[in-house]
Image (cartoon, rainbow, N blue to C red; front, side, top):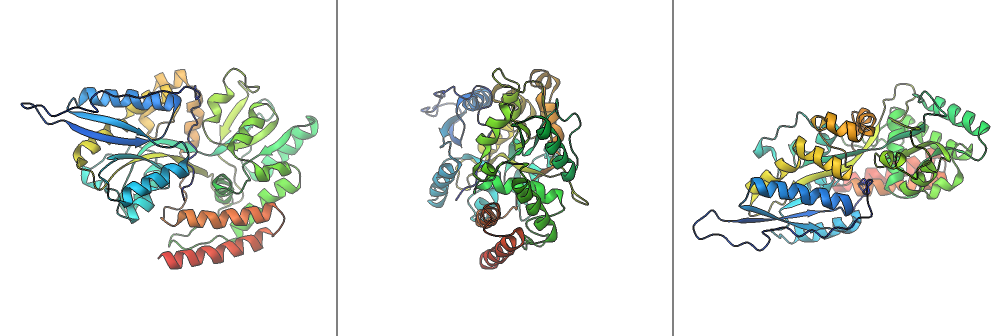
Length: 422
């Protein structure tokens, strides 16, 4: 089962549908010239994301006239795209050659020996955000190249809260203060439904309290005092009325709706929300800030990492040409171009040029959150681990269990999963 990567959802013109037909898909090798290589690039994205991909591929083909790329558009559903890829990779298919991967998939693909380790190509990773590189590495080997980054952070109303909170107690106090003087407003909107989005919110808060899901040895520490404190804080936010009871069924779209309508003081969400907040029709134009989740005690700011990376099928007939495509797509200039077309945040720091920031100034504030990017556990067992955490969160928010009992149950279940999987 796949876990959503929280794509930018086509933040800039998402409704546009493009039909991508690229020259050379049916090319035959010349009798006298170099042989034409045809690569298949499996990727997600419609609208402006599809436009950005097509533009990049055409640029690549211009530089490499004997390499032609066919874009294979996968389902917009992360789960369906994942299952389709698993079918192809399990069968030993030589295509797709290059694959867009959710940031949490490489460990699974690498463990199954479906994708190539990339160290053999000697990639220069110095410009990439460290969290993206960490998520692309499994057992000390690099298996993916970061493409674009997503991190979850805290949105806040600058007109109502001039200074963003740096602690959880201050967040609660600010939420209560504003809602007391603004009838009908929501203090904190967050994703609390039983799905992966609730897990990333919990990871943000957990890190802020000094907690984590697994320790350095890869063993679960879900019922640590820090995690219990984090879940207790989230649960109290609901029970005290800072967050409405309805957040137990909310996903990103629900948070987006209430925040853009001006109904929420704070909201947890991903970078795609920022440009939407500045577009015509938003009730919060010029009133939005984006910061890392606060901390408590010895905790550290934590921003759950999402985004996409690029991997190479181990069975490709063209590893060298596939790597050349990866290099081009993950270059600074191509990432900047993609950001200008689609709004996808670049995964490398040198792509945030003055041109990009002048046309999309919200990237400057988003970039300050990227340095706190925290991958979810890099393990092929993560989907199973996440499912148990989701059960614990749901049981807590619904009042069926206390945070301590719910996390004790998750600890026992995840410990068994890791023992069996190890």
